[in-house]
Length: 135
Ligand SMILES: [Fe+2]
Ligand SMILES: [Fe+2]
Image 1 (cartoon, rainbow, N blue to C red):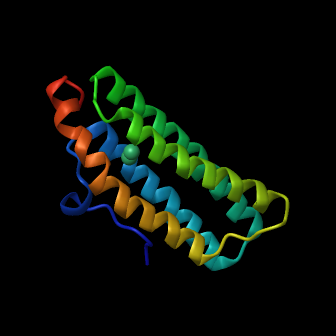
Image 2: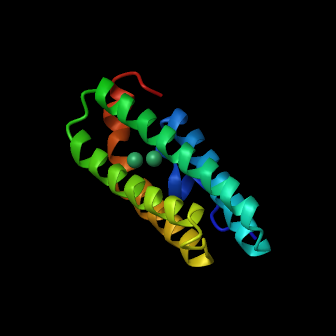
Image 3: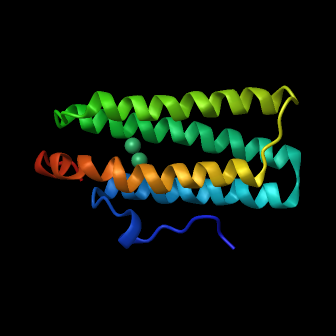
């Protein structure tokens, strides 16, 4: 069972670049969740690192396109991204120091963040990006 499934009804921004990035993010989160289920620490670490690196890459991609389109709420959106990146960096440091484990609570937190952020925050940039030829 996947932790999170991309459906157009729930998650399509209709900016294809970012929809594809979101699908890839979901795959990486599902992989992390599977490894948590198997309780394999080294696999958990590898998928955690991969997921966080991709989160950072995806956020920069959105921020670059929002800036290119002159999107008015860019700063607010960047702040939301920065908060999650900070949380992830803390988690990652603690995990690699052996001071914390990644649990199903952690993957549920990340799932819930995406379920909130994409429809409530990402959706808002779509008209401005589309109007500026960013697809
Ligand atoms: Fe996003
Ligand atoms: Fe975003």
